[in-house]
Image 1 (cartoon, rainbow, N blue to C red):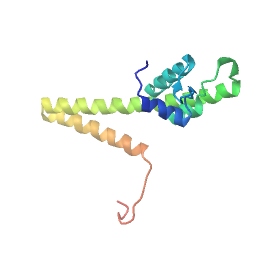
Image 2: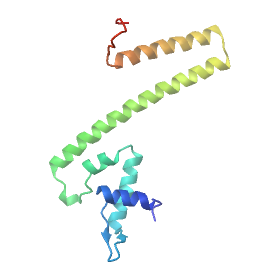
Image 3: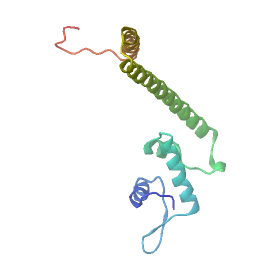
Length: 143
């Protein structure tokens, strides 16, 4: 019905993220609520949530069973997830700029385009170094 493989549904059942009822013949029987849970899981996976995150933070509770502490916990989790997504967007935008500039340089290679690319790469490298944690390896003589 939802275009999800049987193996995926079995896996969801095995990890306890969706628990359909069983018939006498041990076949899984998915209720309308189970199907809504599966659709919610697909949407959350599309939004880059892992199954562990989905299972741990979203219990698919009915609205009347949600307390304020749960709401605060999920809100903090969503805020952190949003911050992660913004970092990924920023990273991908920088990669897009680098690729576009490199392609432009190759299309019309001249000293000016080469210098623009070199300057962008230097700035990008400084940003990378600023955001990386320092590490030291033995035998590098601190170079």
